[in-house]
Image (cartoon, rainbow, N blue to C red; front, side, top):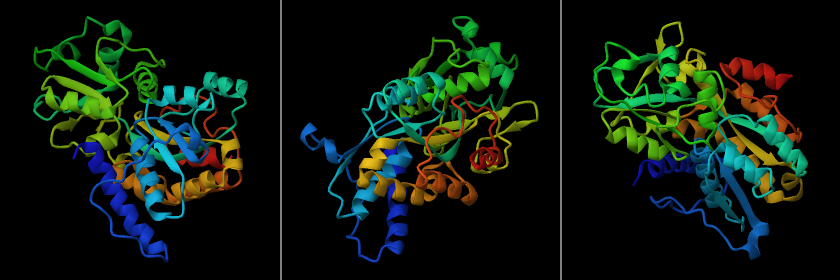
Length: 352
């Protein structure tokens, strides 16, 4: 069983236990293999909930969709849950191809304009926080931490073809090649990382191994002793045996990524919100979508923790639930990246 399957199976198992405690009917015994979310033909598309977008948010949504289908035996529809990256996901969402778009960054103004042009109204629902993790291979004995300035030196466009060895980043590190792995251009992780580290969205060197699939990046870093890469915390948590996280020093001392350091607002600037976007017309016209999202928000905190992310505090979850129930369209995050956002800051934004 690969890493993502293990992660989803764990979340699925936890949800099954919790759901059984809150459901008066007896669930059938669970198979150890994860139920498959199947794609259906166009003739039954009306009963299909289409979801795409971020690979970072994918494990949360996939686990909840599977458990919803298992728990709600009367539900006859299907889910198509894919990931193509946040940016690619918004292209589909704003052209009415999907009902829900997973996102590892807030929707941007240009994407909002496309949605408006196509008559797509949406509800923005934060569901978790992530600690974007910079990691090296577990065999790396020299790197334990890295500064924001060193990350910028390594990843900025000017570094392409020039900063190619470890000792060029820090002189005490060995004179050996540094092989980079990072998010692809359609990924919200790419947008966030470049804004937070380089200071400009999408400003990055291009001579690195890129992918919208976090697992591909994990495999690369996990098999290459000279590697350095970045991806969501859950993907590190699920692959600790072959990866080593670097503590991030933003000027106040080096801090490792963890649930605790995100909750304490210590892991900056790489703590970020994770979100889902819901097509408001689909929500209004399709009771099955509302039923699923009721379930999603109820079980998002426990699922988030199970797959390795940071769940929202109860106060924040209640505010998100109110936003959903009120059908409040538009944005919490004003159509731009939110760098150095703390959970307490999110609460202030949501209350406004």
